[in-house]
Length: 256
Image (cartoon, rainbow, N blue to C red; front, side, top):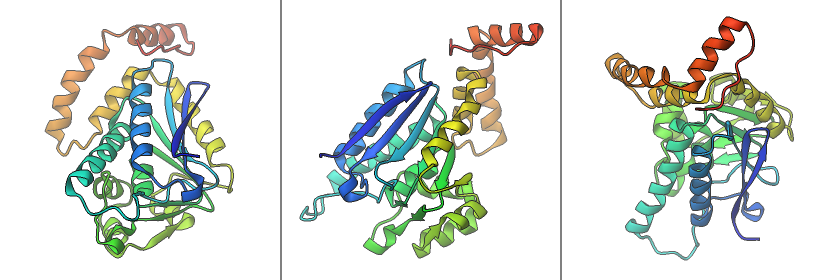
């Protein structure tokens, strides 16, 4: 079967499954483009409240995949990197909360994709590896930004510069993953974790993710707040939230 990204919609969650089992879901050019297309689609869909990214057949993603006989081509590499960067941007700062459900290995680009998500659920079988340096490359898809956000600068330097693997227990201890679960249950627990987002207004979630997108100073955050907050007060969800508060009932948000 050719590389693919399968989409399943379940209770407001778009489950995107990387599917290339023969290659432990290595991320080919076709897979990257398919994943980007799916993420763009769900970003525009009001009915979608959450993105869950996972892999088929007991693994998350073993990294990038190119034809073994392909000659180095800087222009091709630039295009491939650009697609991964857009994917990472949508996971990290796009309008939908993103959860990675990691079973087995998350190496290279797989590590980068998981780290770009808002929440990471890892099975006990999970292993993470940023082994770019072992093939003469550097981390991409934003990992040099997202990994320090999760584990701190010193630990990120150790992981990235030594190219060592991180097992699931260490990943939990250092904050690389948010939840450790029995092998085979990562997707189930990711969907359960995702239910918590349903109580938050979608437009509020999207605005908050935009503010969390690499703002490096208080002034930058305050400027973004001054733009976002007035817009939110005009939304139907804000009116619904105020009404629900007055009436002491759960709010029903529609992302409008």
